[in-house]
Image 1 (cartoon, rainbow, N blue to C red):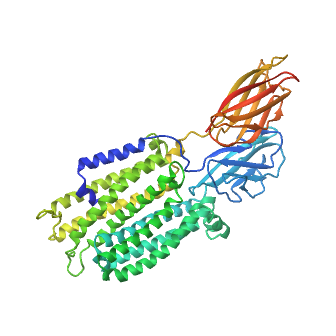
Image 2 (image 1 turned 90 degrees about the vertical axis):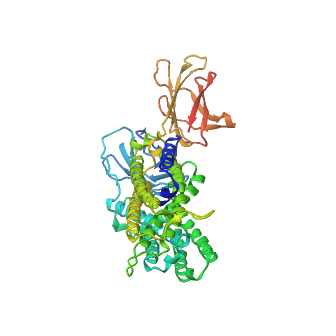
Image 3 (image 1 turned 60 degrees about the horizontal axis):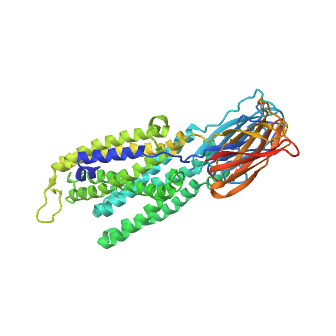
Length: 578
């Protein structure tokens, strides 16, 4: 935050922060960052006449399911599924076979991995023949130990990335001579080795974490193979490959940088920037940025945000080391004041980028002011903003220090910089201030790791898809030709739906008709009519399951009611599909 001390006045900083927070509250809408269950077959609470051969679940985005990801328990509590859950007609629909025909209430427990690599779980019930008492099956919520280690691995990965990127950027942009120091080289090595270890740990932990298993499955080959099939597994593998190249880059950097001039450092900087870009992309491509609204914009914004975070926070830690006095002379080198000033310029750009990209990310993931207090994501974001406020306080101390030790420009076009005659106590004061900022930055990284695993506010507060309900009258013109149709579409979203039509007489009692046919038409796009294969399930009740509706919009359902050989009439009703 030294950049704020030099480039931003208090009022300007307040305005920027206010704008950043205001952006959080702009806009509404829906996003799918964690997979949302949109329909099941049989439906929640449905009563069917015969036991289905397969129980299926449809989600709003592609999901990954393990063999035990969908479990079905009979009325007596015994498990009655085949034990091999799999994808059905598409990547967003999963199911499992049923090997039971007994009547009563069944409980379905499910757990899948969403497109952003986070586990989503739930349960529902249906009945065969008639509802009955049932033994609710215990649903796995996952191992707390695995969850804790998984959070540690992700937080360590963020911190190591910052150390690696920030230390290299500091050396190349601010103080190339610092590469001769052993402690600076150790920071680079710790960043590289820490990111390597955290990445390998994440690869091993993702499977048990996603499937709700314990640490005893850490080295399970089947669980590890399943991890490779999800986007996060691919991204982590790619990160290991980029880290291998980065290891070679560090060796060359330490061996050759001192022998190159400015042009050679520029080439090293370009190569290092490409590697840092590759590492940051492995995060963005497998997390919240890859799904939901505006992914084409969110992906590059997330990458830029990570790079700016690394340059700033990792640079702060490196500056703390550089400000440490020499053991022999108990003084810092004469080049340090100039390096402090150059880092402040670098940090200025990083802070500005973090404000812009962070505001966009907050708006995209949170969606509304109400989500601050009503969702876990919002509450974590409030904690993060509180720590950032403390960072602003630490920045004020740095600003005061810089103003006190700034050297006025001399001559036309001369640049303002820090005086080279800064005393050792003054440098020590600055080091303590920067150390506070670095510590607060570490807390920000820890909260960020929690935010990555939390369900975004937009998804948590979005109204779940629900059925539509319409009542329309009919009159075929013949004897007993009057009545009404009750049309229900569940869940009324693009994809598979269950359409139910109840036929009732003028008194409201269900009764059969000679024939009932239905079709769907999307008039705005001249699509249809799509046939609705209705089947009689009870007197006056007609149902069509798994009706594929290939798009959102206002569809027109046309039902043709025939009450005799010569008496028939079509009736229509609009159906809104989201």
